[in-house]
Length: 255
Ligand code: ADP
Ligand code: MG
Image 1 (cartoon, rainbow, N blue to C red):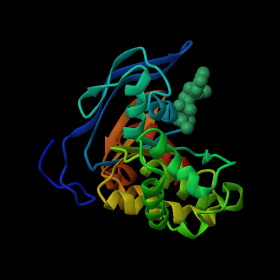
Image 2 (cartoon, rainbow, N blue to C red; image 1 turned 60 degrees about the vertical axis):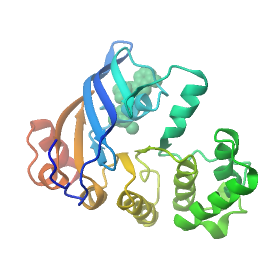
Image 3 (cartoon, helix red, strand yellow; image 1 turned 120 degrees about the vertical axis):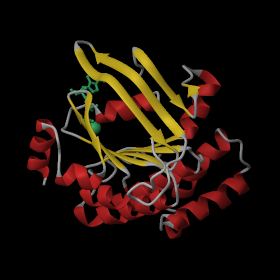
Image 4 (cartoon, rainbow, N blue to C red; image 1 turned 180 degrees about the vertical axis):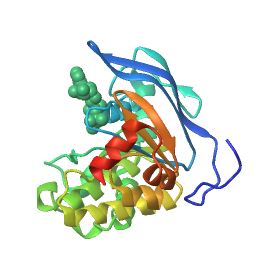
C-alpha cells in the first residue's frame, strides 16, 4: 500500500473488505481457492473472468449468502456474523445488485425502496419515503415511483435495484454482472449510475466484462480463473498487458 493516488484519482483509504485464505467447495469442486483480497474504503475493484470461475460465488460469500470452510472475511475489521440480527445488519452494510433485478413485483417502485429502511433500519415511513425519492431522483427514475416493476424497462428496474440497495446506506456495494441481462441500449444508463456512484466515493466490487466501465471507474481489476485470483492490476495494465496465459486467452476471446 502506497500513498499514490489511484488511477481513478482517489487516495487509498483504510481496508474495508478483507478476505484472507478463503476456501470453499461445492462437493468436489474447489470453487474458491485461497482467496486473498483487500478492498479499501472508496476503492472500486472490477472482478473479471470466464464463466464458472467463481465470481458470483465470491460475491455471495462476501455477503454471506454462501458459507465457506476456511479463512476469514472481515468488513471494517469485524468478522462476519453467522446469523440473527448481527447478520441482518451485515447484509445492510453490504449492498448487492444482481444480474436479475429481483424487485418485489407486487410492490410499487417506491415501496421497493422504502421496505428495507422501514423494516431493518427502523425509519418512519415518511422519512423512508423522503430518502427513497431522493435516491430515485439520483438514479433518474423518480417519475416512476408509483408504478410497478413490470411497467418499467430492464434498465429502469436495475436502477431501482441500485437505489434500493443504497437506501440501506451500505458501506460497500457488490454488483454481480448488473448489465448482462439488459438490452444493449439500456446498458449505458445503468453503467452511468455506477460510474457516478464510484465518483461519489462508494466502495464497490463489480463483476462485469464492461471494459469501458473498468477503464472509467475501476482502481483495480482482479482476474479470476478456476476459483483462484490469477492476476490483479490497474485496468490500463490489465487490458493492454495481461501477464498470465489464462488472462491473455480470456481477453483474446472477449475483446
Ligand atoms: P461465475 O459467476 O464466475 O460464472 P459461479 O460462482 O457462478 O461462477 O460458479 C462457479 C462454479 O461453481 C461453477 O462451476 C458452478 O457450476 C458452480 N456452482 C455455483 N453455484 C453452485 C451451487 N449452488 N451448487 C453447486 N455448484 C455450484
Ligand atoms: Mg456469475
